[in-house]
Amino acid sequence: MSDTLQITDIKVDGYERVVCGTDSKSGLRAFIAVHDTTLGPALGGLRMWPYESDEAALFDVKRLSRGMSFKSAVAHTGLGGGKAVIVGDPKKLKSEALYLAMGRFIDSLGGRYITAEDVNTSIEDLEIIRRATKHVTGLARKDGGSGNPSPYTAYGVYVGIRAALGWKFGNDDPKGRTVAIQGIGAVGSALARRLIQSGATVYAADRNTERLSQLAAEIGVKPVDETQIMTMTCDVFAPCALGAVLHDESIPKFKTPIIAGAANNLLLEPRHGKMLQDRDILYAPDYVINAGGIINVSVEFNPGGYDEKVSLTKIERIPQALKELWTISREERIPTSDAADRLAERILVDARKKKRAQAMPKGR
Ligand code: NAD
Image (cartoon, rainbow, N blue to C red; front, side, top):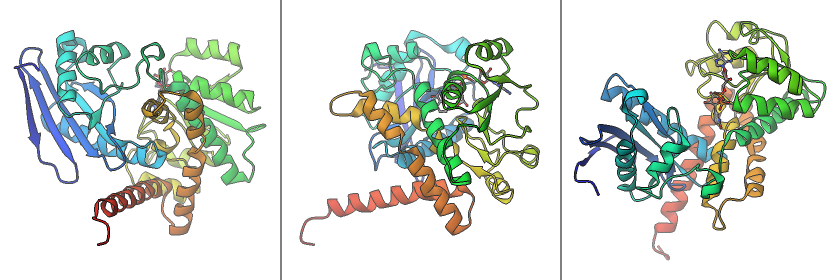
């Protein structure tokens, strides 16, 4: 253990543990938030970002770790929610010493927090972290990890889109349907391939026009201008690029009955869920439909180790979770985004009750 690593606890209501770690030698300043471990150890990625202040970093790590608890609960991964952030500019601060210090910081939590890739953190960074702690997931298959999560995220979105088609039209077959994909990167392109193989017509827009033309030639996606992808008439709009694309200006212009895609934090503000409901647009909440990647990572904790078959079977339960929350939305007349949070909270409350009951001495 480095003598220069300092760890300070920060008391935050509603979180099991929040800690700040600093290391003067490597310049590390990081926060780890363990939101909830009722369902299992808190898994969540490690983000590196040039936050303006400690308050901004703390706000982000708390928000993201709570989000991970909800995501894992609804996806039944058997994991809890946590997150870590390193404060700093990745272009200037990244070093071997920094990641080794971060590894020791993660290790100090004794496995209650397990890290993974996130914004500005690569597999190579995780490999350095792993030299200081075993509590790392999402490494390459050759290193015993579950590998790149994107194809699994795409598969989850694909089965989620089928569920949405079934819910809206009474037939989940993508054949003959039109899907507009915004962002044809790692997830978007894998999703497009599956949809086209199933007989759907896929329109796509991407900032990277070269990649778009390549995919048009390769798999037959139909290129659309970036400015038109959100307003075109289609059966499904699948946002797979950026978050915060559902807001006051975009929502009134949609000509789609379904929004279902991979991007995180799609609603600019929670109230935009209500705007979608008022327009009768079926929204598949982002953290439910894009859980394929985390489900795949969670399979690393299987007693027999990672097994792709187990992963795919678990991902195929995403439609069930979506139908459950759409039912809550219909019965309680609330937006589907609120219904997802309600479902997650219910799962967590039930698990806490069960745990407490098991902890009670028998016969009392
Ligand atoms: P990616 O970087 O591989 O792809 C994103 C694509 O979007 C790029 O090709 C980029 O050029 C394009 N893009 C950016 N801005 C755009 C715009 N305004 N209009 C059109 N295209 C634009 O990322 P990814 O791994 O495919 O992830 C896509 C989204 O899904 C991200 O929001 C990510 O956070 C989320 N997500 C990904 C995973 C995963 O397993 N990769 C899991 C959960 C959530």
